[in-house]
Image (cartoon, rainbow over all chains, first blue to last red):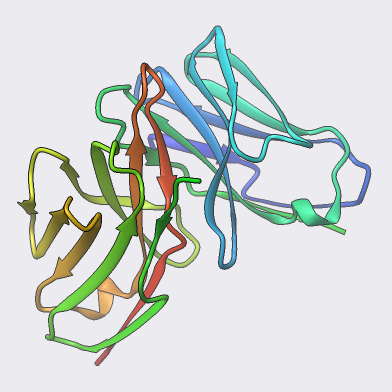
Length: 112
Length: 114
């Protein structure tokens, strides 16, 4: 069983639509992260959360919002999707020690 | 600003050869480094890590070397196999207070030829 799961795995949507990507983990980690990956740009941090009451912006948070519903769940929302948000999105978790991060399988989002 | 970068975006090797993937970092305060492997269609997978109080760490067929003098990190893969074909990322921990965030390099594509 996967420790970090993401739903959906693939999504095609239209400009202006609201989209939510969900992440769940069974690792018992306090820290959770959302990244986007674009060709040639590597992984860039969107938001991160060190516990249920802690939410922090990453380097590219504009156009995104997050919700930490529980220790095990961290969702990413695009309130009004735009084409340049087409990317691969990854959720990750860590236990807060030396910050090895465990990644989910990713969500491929296409905004038309 | 701070950055983590790679010297080579692509690397092609013959099966059985050793591979070396390089990474430069710019923050001398970074104290933890990780190498990740990402296969096509999958999320990044942890390979090996190293703390700044070490200069070498070995795993199974992999070795990470850290040179703090020149802010350079390398991943050595011994007897490279076709299953090693993937994109490899280095990541840097820019610690400060309680904010342990990783910053990733852009990745190197390793192709292993049979």
